[in-house]
Length: 111
Length: 114
Image 1 (spheres, chains in turn green, purple):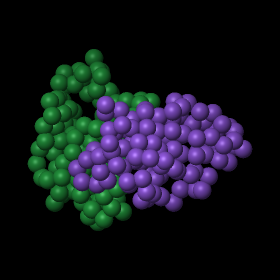
Image 2: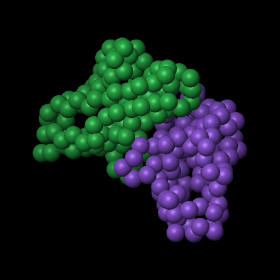
Image 3: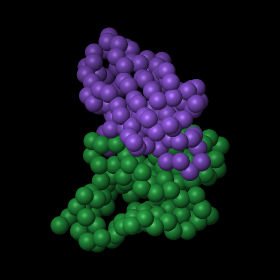
Image 4: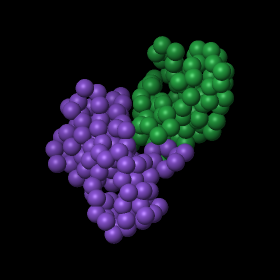
């Protein structure tokens, strides 16, 4: 099974940087996804990591360390529209069909 | 077209009603998913269809019955639901089950069982 932990809430100022950590324990690892979900809307895909290292996509970057069971999502130059829930999701190598989601981190961006 | 559509957006039903949720995608994806999401909780996987065959049933009660009529459509038939089944029901699709392919989510159907 999966055990995925992320902080419940984070608050940051517009223009700042926020780092959302995700730790996981899994019997077999086959990729980690980050999704953004605004209140009342569907999750939207942000990033995917399967090898160690940093993936950069514009203002968003995601990092993975498989040996530590650790990932983070870095949001730079925060904008008000970045206020949302950020979900870490892990795929287990024993079942490629299934994504297990963490509880999500609610990020609030303040002016 | 990178869109997953779901109908209806909102549904209120009594415990004796029978209703269906519909999901459609035209991206040629071969895997489709149903998730249930309660407020302030992450999505929970219910069913996975791969190449129009049911691949995963996460021990979902039989009052939820999925159906995949073709590669673009996914239905969720509801019967004799309980108030605790009230939630946001999300449909998703991916190019192929597994590998690096991300799942695209529809906007969801907000279900209220009275």
